[in-house]
Image (cartoon, rainbow, N blue to C red; front, side):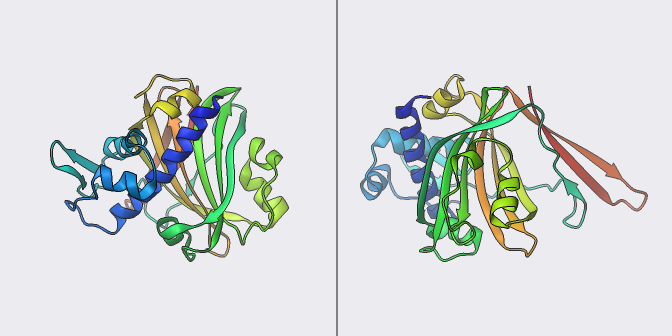
Length: 255
């Protein structure tokens, strides 16, 4: 793993969160501040800002118009795999999964992630960036956000680099996850992500975002991940009953 690639990736993550926060308080068609203004506000270079903006353009969140700037994209059409009350299970993906920690930090939630986790923007959360591997091959980059109040002490490297994080949260911190809402969209990888995943720049990828709740209904984790499009796929099964009810199950496959 290249330290400079990791640093660029994490700086871009901060810019990405800022841009998404701007988008959430605007309507489709509204402009966002100019690149020059955003670079000054965030203290980053124009290439770093553009890399984050390019990802959001690729996923259809922003629209770039030559000579005019960037604008909030139209709302996306969303189709659920199953009704809210239908059974939805996600078996563990195939292969032997492990992880390498890129960065951990205790930092304020901020407005956007605070809304998702139903916590004050000033409240602390534990941020973890890790590279996930399958059978030793880089497969995904994950950015995890967990309320610090649920995990008073920093998660040990062993909890983050081996096994299933949810198992460690249950066994070591008493956090029992029960349900999650997850979205999947196509995207492409930037330079830093390509270096970490070992793929060419602009390779296809899957952007997966997930909000997880515990048995009491509290949000306990928000995570967004970039999965290799050439090595990972998600397969779902739909079961139709006579009354038209649909139940769904899904599984991820690394190959």
